[in-house]
Amino acid sequence: MSINSALLSGVSGLVANSSALAAISDNIANVNTVAYKRNQVNFANVVTAQAVKGKYSAGGVQGITRQFVSTQGLIQSSGSATDLAISGDGFFIVTDKGAGLTASDARAFTRQGSFSVDADGYLVNDSKLYLQGWPVQSDGSFDINPSDLSKMTAINVKNLGAAVAPTQNVSISANLDKGTVVSSVEGAYNPASTNSMADYAAGVATGTKPDFTIEMNVVDSTGGSRKLTMAFLKSSGNPNEWHAEIYAEPASDVTAAAGFEPGQLAKGLVTFNQDGSIDLANTDLFGAPGATPQLTIDSSTGAAPMWAAGLGLAAQTIDLDLNKLTQYASTSTVNAIGTDGAGPGNIVAINVDESGIVSAVYDNSQIRTIAKVGIATFPNPDGLAQVSGNAYRPTLDAGNYVIKEAGVGGAGKISPSSLEASTVDLSSEFTGLIQTQKAYSASSKIITTADQMLEELINIKR
Image 1 (cartoon, one colour):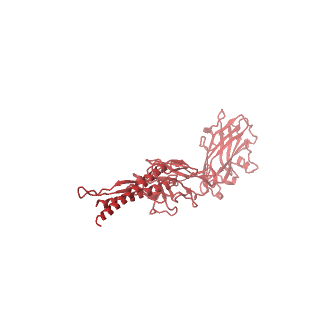
Image 2: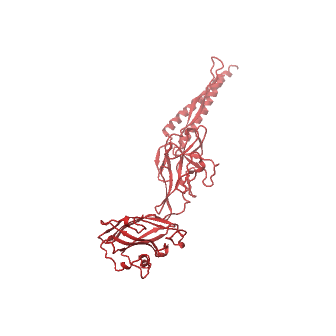
Image 3: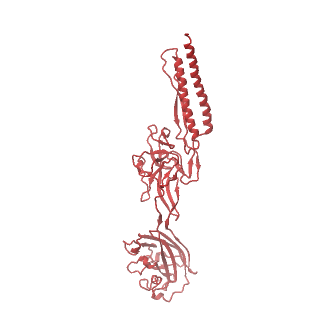
């Protein structure tokens, strides 16, 4: 009977508008939820077969939920360096646990980037989901696989220990006075005997006192500070030539090579051009004339010269930049000594750049790469299924995911110290709320009207 179909059509209207009200309620409740994507219930009519000509059977309406997952929310600046937003397509990959993650553990996808460091050092968002990334390899690279989620692990930024950077480069800016008078002991000077400048520094009575010294503090492989000295003695053979030695203080820090005095690392001549600039082509302090200004200090298991075995230090190569070493008619002086390297330092900050590289910043100015955040993209992100925590899981409608580096292959870039706002527009939601209320009331009128008509029909026979 058509009246019955009208009654059922009214019921379907109540059900559909109830679903619309639920979706609007969710949207309004999550207006301030980070990266929340609004939902909407659209209506589609239901048509029933017309078996008898001249009669109409109402089919009613059905509610179809539509997600707007692909809609970009407004990127807003935040005060936390670990807050992340994706500008463009893609999702962060997250799990519900950090340690002990296996290939069988479920992964989820979210754009809620309000990450912070938990008590165990993991990056987790407000929904307690752990951010996944490719851990850095020993050579500084990343093992990136576009489809293998097991290559990624929960990013931990605390269990790294202290950072030490041994000295690799030293730059010297200094002047040797061209007017220095040749010392009376220069004739007896012998860098390969107890007449050396290294022996004088060690307190040997027959050692030769240098005319000028440059002291350098370098950092060893364990973060300790070691003192190296570069000593000069004016040569009588050439007005633009100086005897030079580089030695450790104390001498016991170094086991010298054969033919070298205790503590010595290098010995030879430093030559200058007529304009006062250094002549590296004829300088043989580091071996043959023109040799690269470099000190190689081997480990206790290698060839000499090497760090003393009792120190237990790793081998170390130090490049010296002597281009600003001059010989002018001015007082011998050190203008500047520049060294890299750093002693033990602790983490003071976490940085994430646009490409997703997570780095730890130490209080000794060292920066250590930890991991790289991957971005998952889907052919149809609106087809993803919602799960608790403002996250999603894959579905057939969404298609197969591809894991990409941020900003590569269509994946969005990461905006550090930023959050993506909710896509809910309150004005639209409240307008929809009014429309849904009216539509619900209208559907209820269908039911009451059909009830009255059925009552009239029943009352035909009294």
